[in-house]
Length: 244
Length: 244
DNA sequence: CGATAGGTTGAGTCGCATCAACCGGGGTGG
DNA sequence: CCACCCCGGTTGATGCGACTCAACCTATCG
Image (cartoon, rainbow over all chains, first blue to last red; front, side):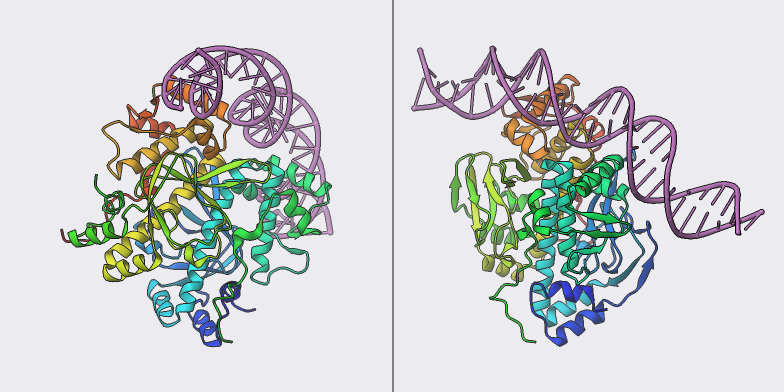
């Protein structure tokens, strides 16, 4: 299985074999966690960048009274916190949603690779900006979209992000996350997630059995969810040309 | 009036007179807009970083059916989009909330200053990370907090951010934004914003007349809003020491 | 002095939450 | 091998928080 970070970045720039190798070298698996474990807690001092190689994870915050908000979902190829070195303490938690394999990359390893291969640096910038754009789109979802739109939008987003790392086939992908976690991410109760899924299924927009999500008609789901994929910035810039 | 960007960054690092001058030099006012104008639209190719010198602005998205979400609020000293160069197109709009004075800073100007004064580069990193942290906290607000908590939390945040650029006195600050805009930011209807403000006023947590916000007891408002200021990362790192 | 933008209030409705019960499947232990 | 458990999913009943619609009020400004 190819390195998901490499695959993802190649949606933005074409990387040379040498660049790919450099990335793979610094993202070797260093840590394995089970489902529902914390990768790093708030208040901790971050020591390295966590790159997800396998499995799903999330960023979340817990309010004093127990309410929990999943702030971002991390898929294979995602960098959990590039750059956090600058800050002294984590202001949120990183937890797994499924069993996860992580590469812990040191700040200096990243610096060196970026210094030697500026195009990788540019690709990492792109990845940061897309992450920020995703966060903004979640703000829109939570603020404006109804439950069906919100869930449909999330499905579109995750499907496209998984496709960008080669983890989908034509119309379906693994979808290993519980309704409770979906609720915490979308600001909805588990019960309402369940009813909303039922509705989406009834309207034929999705199929969801076990851990498998199928989107038979992606454009239809996009339309129903007011989903505009341009915020993912997945088209390569023709002005940024790489060798191969 | 001192440069608000300089003031803000000095919450993180101590800058030398030379560094301050360099920052001031590249953030001269270049554009003035009235209230409720667009600074840049979605689809546009970003050409420079917009630094707010005076007034309030916001990032927002508009859905096809007219629903509008204000995604971030920009105050004096804020950089609207450091780095967007990497992306081809804006995926959102930048608009003013009040009359605004902006410094349009070129990519190269920033690169040069950062290259010459690495500490400024580090401070700009800090500013980016705090911006991201604020965005995450909005996600939590929209997903989990009730209307009173949500508004209270926003007041705490804006008050502290304004204080960081010296735009508050003991307990109060300018608050020039309409209830409609507050609603678009917090995912609530104008009517409900109005009722929620009434409630906050009745409980003595805030006073809000005209364009003046007073928070007589900030800790009380923080407690009522589940506000934990640590995400703003406003304590200087003792390991990052500057001359003066 | 009228026009207009912003703020305020009431009445009725709806989306989603809460509480509670129940179902089904995979894993465990006797 | 079966009994049991537990987690995740499903469904119903009821209540609340926030929305919509609509009217009205107030301050500002040309």
